[in-house]
Image (cartoon, rainbow, N blue to C red):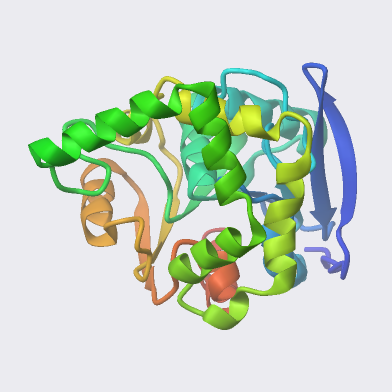
Length: 297
């Protein structure tokens, strides 16, 4: 087996997909193991994986991509969905990586990863999920049914956000650097990981033309397939890393649903929050490396 050479600053490049710019980075080369493709969550980008790329590229060929609508990729006024992002990832793998990959996705990227693995299993050797987004059938996303008054509030908010003025106001609020920092401090267990650099990396793409419309479209779009529907079509090994300090996810309930519906599942619990890979990168990198070497050592 040849040696992989790590790159301190991974090579960034752009690729045109369906007339839109898609940004990606690559580090490491020469391994016979399946390449690792990293897929960020909502509002993030390839930058969110910098500490993972630097470490994991010592042993693996590592790629990361900005989903359309995020990061340095284009932000057209499209109807965004798991199906769109799965198609983007599939075409990227075929165009650039050219062999089956292990795909790792956080939050929204976890849902896109499941959508890719379910629809194009021929391109996916393995799946790594880090607090993945998505609801199951016959259950509330947070694991418990809503009370009538909670249901009424949710419906009101969803209706309100369909108004362009309301969506724009919310976007302008959540994109403030002070609000980004506040949100990160809520969802990171390791508060020291919430740096000025991290805040800037999330803020910068929100200034791009089309960013506000992407925000509105994602929240107004039709829901895609439920997670259990996707898992039924995933046959490769799956690693789920659950950041148990995540205030946005009931990890015990979600973990139980994954065990019910996902074959070939390995679970690891982490003291991290919603983004284990950036919250506690050393721990997450070691978990990913051990799992990959177990299957493709």
